[in-house]
Length: 354
Image 1 (cartoon, one colour):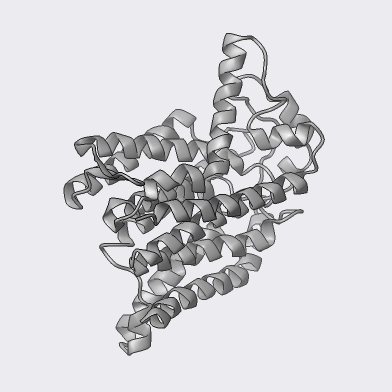
Image 2: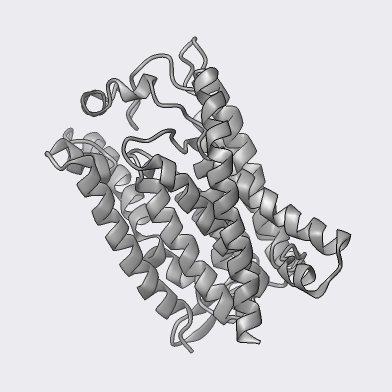
């Protein structure tokens, strides 16, 4: 039984990597052909001023490295998910039926979330590369989109799946009733804010890959094998992206990758909580620790500039601060990877406590 379940997880995940590697040259060709990068340098800081320190770190690459590399991730996941589903129905033999992991109870919601966020992010990236120099879709509009989608999913958890509590390690469950909806919205927005971690070659891919792999393990040990399959397929698709994103990056993930992935991470955390008789939500700040410190560093920076009139960090978020004080980008990235893997292991342990 265990061997059969592992095969169900490993084969689609491996297929996702193969699809990603094969699809990358075609994607790269069109990204470079249509010059899918920003046409002018510069970035606006969180307080609305020009990000001077960022301009010192990112000069030439801003207008030479294609965006929208996140397409490779969600395309690979969608291809494998629908491909195994189609195989199981076209050739209903035991192996193909076993590999099909598209299920209403475990994978419909995260797949919907991934694609919804990816398409909204794609629209933002399209505007971001226009010669007019537009900064994509307004942040308030993107936040409204994330809020509406997450509120709907939170309502689905509460009204359709009967989720009205969160797991507390060592103390069972904490009943919150309909407050599960705003809690889900807040967590999703918080994770989305962590999307700015996509700022150094290889950084976002390594951090997110570790997080989704941790939840693949959690879901598997909760016997949510279809969800584990989805998480593993997503993880390996990220690794295929990372193959081409390590320095010097062939393309960047940008919003079409980060928006869908961050929103999906929130969904999976809740699906591995009381629904899976675990503590997926409590483990989220641990597993997503690099994202947490990224968001906190932004909050601290903005608050300090408004209250004290000066900055805490040379530049926020934190990974750019390390660059600004002289760390090579590869050192920042690899140390974040190490922290991500350690926190993923700790988070898995917490999520599976009995």
